[in-house]
Image (cartoon, rainbow, N blue to C red; front, side, top):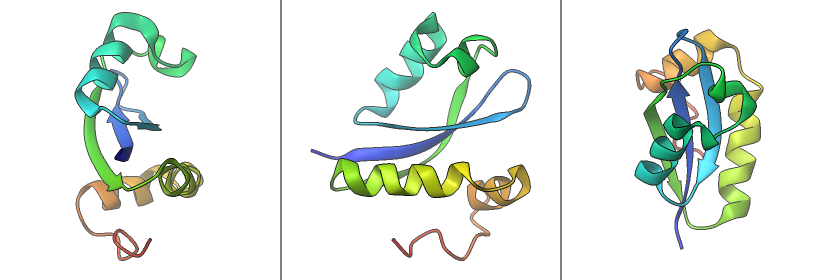
Length: 88
């Protein structure tokens, strides 16, 4: 099964990072209010970036890494300007 680490842009322009095994379903669930408390307060959201992994452990490792970044660094990743994008 494939897993995805994703970045969603919230209605207030903040970014949320998470993992899922179904990008489209996850975005829909977030927008139905079944996401995290963070996104629930900032609807609607739009998944604007994702990376595909072969297992949950790799996706979770990347999620933790991205969550530790500044918003500027995340924005650069989204734009394709971050050099570590494909290193994992």
